[in-house]
Structure formats: C-alpha cells, structure tokens
Image (cartoon, rainbow, N blue to C red; front, side):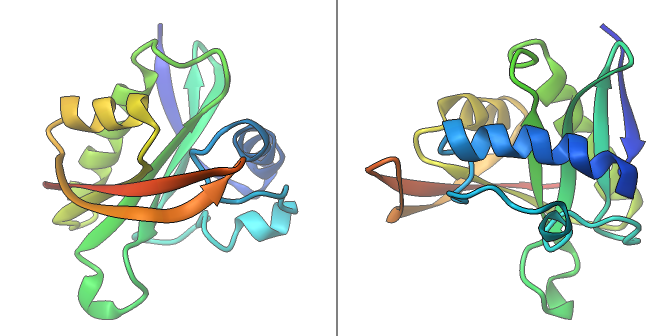
Amino acid sequence: MNITFEKLQEHHLPEVKEIYDWYIKNSTATFHTESLQVNELKEFIYIGHPLYTSFLICADDKPSGYCFFAPYKKRQAYNRTAEVTIYLKPGFEKKGIGKTALEYLEQKGRENGLKNLLGIITGDNEGSMALFRKCGYTQCACFKNVGEKFGKVLDVVAFQKEI
C-alpha cells in the first residue's frame, strides 16, 4: 500500500468533516458530541500555518484520513511542543497507516523545530494507545473521569515523545 501525505487545503475540509463526523457519532475518540460545520473545523485544524501543519492521508491515492499538529497551549513558550492527532476513515485501520502517519508527523515536527510531541487519547481507545506506545511514546498522565460520552465516564491519557 502506497501512503502519501498532502498539505490540507480548504477544498479538503468536506472530506475531513465526513471522517470526523463518523467519530463524533460512533466513537469516544473525540469528545465532540454534535456534528460541526466545515468552518468550525478550522478552529483546531490549521491550514497554512507555518508550525501547526495539517495533512490529508491517502492510501493508494484514496483519501484515508487526516493528521495534524495543534498547539499544546496557546502561549509562545510552548511553541517547542505540539499535540498530534490522527483520524483514519473507517476501514483503513490496522493497515499500518496510523504508524506511518505518526512517523511522518515526527519527521515534519523535527523539520519545523518541534522538540516534544503529545498524544492526548481517550482512556478506552486501546488501539491509539497501543500505536503511541509502539512508536516510542511514554504515558505521562492520566486524567481520571474527565469526560462523558454515550453515557460512559471516560479518562484522558497523555503520551509524550521527545523528538
């Protein structure tokens, strides 16, 4: 499988919205509970930002997900650290795409001068936690019972890797 990455552009946002909507409706991977408008995605998915880049993921030339950097906190002293996020289209999981995307983000992070990457993951998302561990991330925090979705109280687990 050939996996490629393309810088996210405005015209990709409907595809991103479709993927994200699936996670909103069917998963605890996001704590959004209602579908967002396309323009609302731009509040946390940056397009054209020099440091916090976003990418469309394609597998064999088919859109299969997206990944992006986001600020850890919106203060300048944290500019050496970014949160990384990966969402794959249903049916594209467990094919090595997530691992390739995470490695790609690490490479781009180094090129952009980032020193630390964080993965903030819902505590019941075993697949994502396994991916981050496999890629050398260390669990550095667990926030107990901080979210609730689908009637289930959920932890949030933070993973960190110095790049």
